[in-house]
Amino acid sequence: MALTLDLAERIVKAGIAKSQEMGVPVSISIVDEAGNLAYVARMDGAPFLSPHIAAGKAYTAAAWRASSAEIEERAAKAPYFHGGVSTMTQGRAIFRKGALPIVVDGKIVGAAGASGGTSEEDEDIVRAGIDAALKG
Image 1: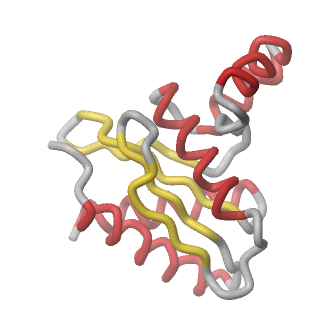
Image 2: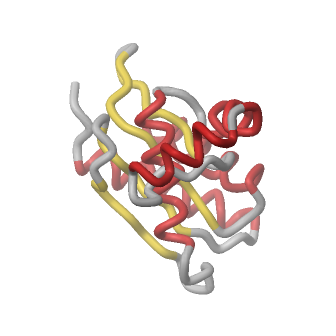
Image 3: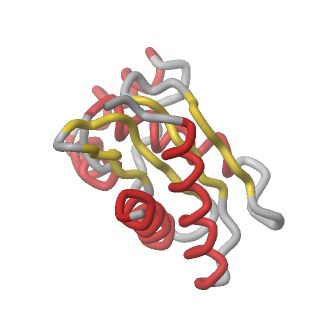
């Protein structure tokens, strides 16, 4: 199964509901398995760079097929390598917690990233969005 617009929209809507519950305005970006932007939403009051940061986090999770938190840990151990990766991707890769792969039927079909809260809040928001969208 590929990432669909319907699934991306459901993830974003559920993530926004979680962020409203938390009182944290964010942007949420969804990318497909190749890192192409599929959906982005910026809540009222979210920082103006947050859509781009959310997309970069999601791109990173899709590229490495892992949570951006895991990649952030790897980047801390190899900063020159990851700095080079950031340069090669024209800054698209962002090595910060707040994005998770989207797994459907055991296959990674994309990733969701958030920005606007703390890194932990961002990850909680995308986890809630993915979990709710895949249940419903």
